[in-house]
Image (cartoon, rainbow, N blue to C red):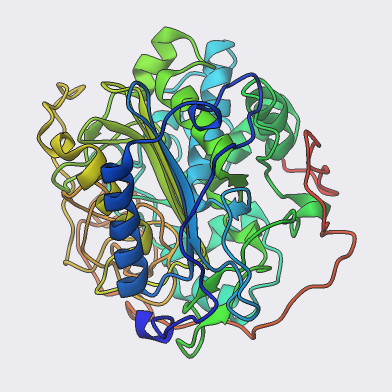
Length: 497
């Protein structure tokens, strides 16, 4: 439905270069005093990004590409608000969807370093009531091989969320949508991208620390990493979205019509996808997470033991992916998409932020933009030699071409697409239904995994449209119009068991 946004936007400005960008946390940004990538490369990038934005109907995009020794490219183009024509900016806050997973898993791995948990502990030690929880480990959850049914693949969840996208969900409510289904398989066997996994890890962090996961991430991850413009909206501040930010546009609605989703409540994504950041914080975070600056070398080594996903060119570790040598994550939540990756071989970083998640020809808009950039900046990455994999694991197998749920997408089954770097891969961050397997949870084959080995149609079909009215929330106790600078998210009124 990109055609809805593909109409000419008369107010859209040309790409705007950033001559001097903000620095933070002592991390010097090369674009503040260093050279650009050269006139030819800059012109090619401008043209490529403009072409993708036009063809995919992307309202606005902010891009940062930093290549030590070669220069950088930091630009914004298009509009942040289609109604007013306000231009996009590289200084805006943005929702980052599944990039939240990199922060949640970092906080979890810090507890491993502290000796307070072990990756091979069963989830049942920390959270009761998880189907097959005695056999599913924290490692299985982080590497997306738990065998649990994703709550975001449940039709009732899609209906409840999109009928009222301003409602608040608790983590237990989210998990209940998935737990009513039988498991998709035995733990450790098949890679299935699953938001239930990260919600469970968020509960583990809370159980072990005695603090809310948003507070733990703020204190132990954001502050040491000097990320002053990154936050986890939660509790009374769940609707917090600091200004300035772009309006987000999605077609994940009851009718499929495009709506402004800027102020939708992100509680449904919680520790799997609720966080907010900006281009320059993500520039810093890309290297921090890829190099393990907040972890011990041994724990970072565990994190980067990537395994095959079953999609050519894409391997996944503990809350992080690797493709063509690039390490990082992407994100999508209704109205916004992002990509944050780091290339150790060149010490290069790429960050892309968009204010739409509307696909074009089955491809994510962030994928189209990032691929266009890397084809110019690092054309050899698609042929870069791959590191040896950690261990032999059968590739992911899927019941049907539309059966795999990849993160945050409501309204369509899984769409095949080309990865960020030109290789065939799935989108890591949409809320799609496309159930992996269906039916209520049971264990008919006696192996204890909650499944009976058969593949069934989902209870209510593999396509479901949902949405909500286009409404705006006024400022109030749960929403501020001012940036959060080093402020801790407010604690929840409730406590998790």
